[in-house]
Image 1: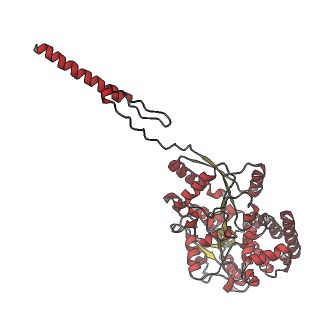
Image 2: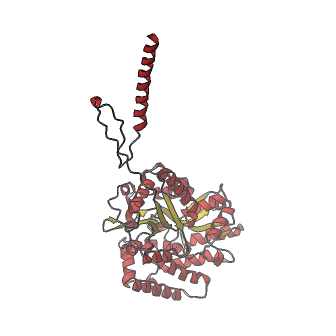
Image 3: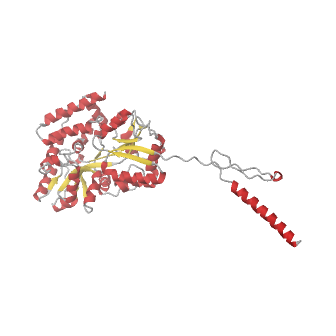
Length: 450
């Protein structure tokens, strides 16, 4: 009897164990859109199945197409792309081009091969690309941008683009070379610049590397010398450019153009034996190596200079505007602009990327930490760079600063006018001939825009 009882108890226990294993095995997690299978209990103990929790649909990774210039930032672009991919799973397909950038961009836009995000200048390009760009006015991340950085992308109260960098440009000098030459007073006028050049040359130091082989160096140098002209137009650059656009003003009517020619002549005179063969790389490497004391460039050149000479001490000189040292200053603005294509295939993802660039820890530190320039984002760290610190110091001390007003010129003006100024520096043409060429080219641009 004991043996029979023991066998019965074992059978009861074994049946209960097997019933429990079957319930667990069949209660597999539900897949979204399907019903889960529930083990059936005896009718007398029927149970009601709990509804399976619905999972959030997973977003497919997105590849954004970005079309940028500034090839000197390729390393930084790649670093940012890698960080974004690691955090979001999305890919940034970045094409970087310098030569003929505007031509290639326009061809893409006209053919329908529109990048999700593309780069341009501010000011005049707000109109140039108005049919392609998305209105960022109501995007939350725009509230995190410094208002002054939005000036160049604001049209009738609408925000047409995302300010990428805050930049400055003027004459950059090697502080140690100035000190070694006994120069203690920094030049502000054209005559003072010439005196400094003579003092440097007397010490066996070449004063300038010209950069004249690069068409874009010429207009940046030239138009800085015209910056105070806004005073003749009630302090308004828009009125100045409007006068040029209507034909009421021509370059040959601007008496301050003589300052431009005088300064270009000075840089050429003290710019070595082959001034037309000097490009950006020659400028930065020569300054870093102590071969020259000055170049006209912007804070974007610092990274190349410091990589070549980590111990170099850099400073900014104000650009002369004739004999009035009080108006000599630096150029300071946010001109490089990111444009979101309103008809892009990945509009929302493009906005998400800009939001990440503006609000994430990596994004806030990318420009000051990786690019080592000034950021337009509120509360961003100060750039770990000498020229950024110089810019802030000069502005705090009341040094005049001027916006990049020349970006209000019609699209295509920068390269065309720069090439004409190259022709002047190469020799063989008078100032009057160059002024006529500048006026003719400018008016032809306006006709093409109409």
